Image 1 (cartoon, one colour):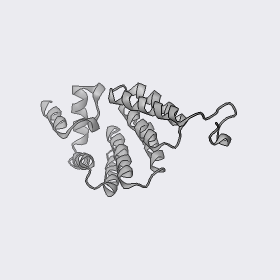
Image 2: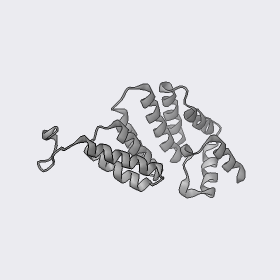
Image 3: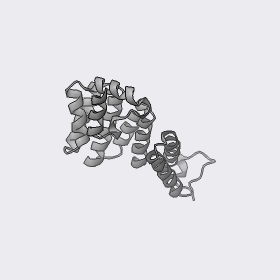
Length: 171
């Protein structure tokens, strides 16, 4: 069976959407196991198989940030934002962009992204927490303290508020 055959090269035939779904879930599971590189590989293949999958774009963006490819993550979030107008999803995607900007220490961009996310998901504790860190000027200091403790696992989104403050207090 050919699916949208005119959009595929002559030597490519669409067999089943299940192949892309399987790659998506393999990437999802790899990320859950903290295997960021494996997640990126599986999710990239899933996206090649289904280039308009909102879920795969969002998951690949998250995996890209996990492996510190934040600029790529921002581009993926932008692509995902073109595929939905559903407020909860839009809020989540803007939070992802905010996270990538935060990790890049682009404070104004992070602030703008988190503020935009709150327009779509006003109850997001993650966005509120990150905005408070930025507003208090604590972002740069927090990032430096976290780097001192465990630079390989540096990721504020993966931490609870309590873990962030404990890490900051221990320095």
